[in-house]
Image 1 (spheres, rainbow, N blue to C red):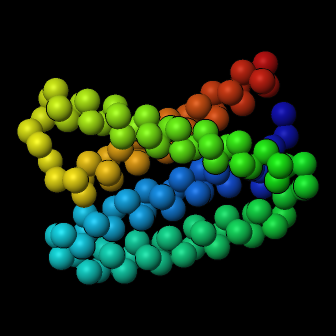
Image 2: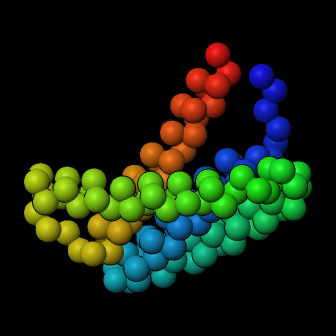
Image 3: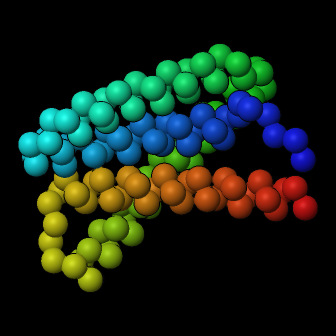
Length: 125
């Protein structure tokens, strides 16, 4: 199966990466890591720019699928927060809210990306 260089799935993952980068900012602000904050802002701008370019290259029918994928991403982000909340409640001592949202967002985007990959693999067969 030939994959196109742009797809609404890739854009939704890129948007998820933007969310993860935004979720890590409070963590680095609290720690006083200005250099990392600057790098995150540059990476955020680059990924957002790439997502905008990819969105502009999408066919109209592919653009119509993006809102549903963004809803799926939001659900996965919430699920990531719930799972990480449970994990930290059961297996670790309390961490800061900054680390919690960073971990939850990261897990949510990972679940979103793996779920999209898995669904694509099953459609290909």
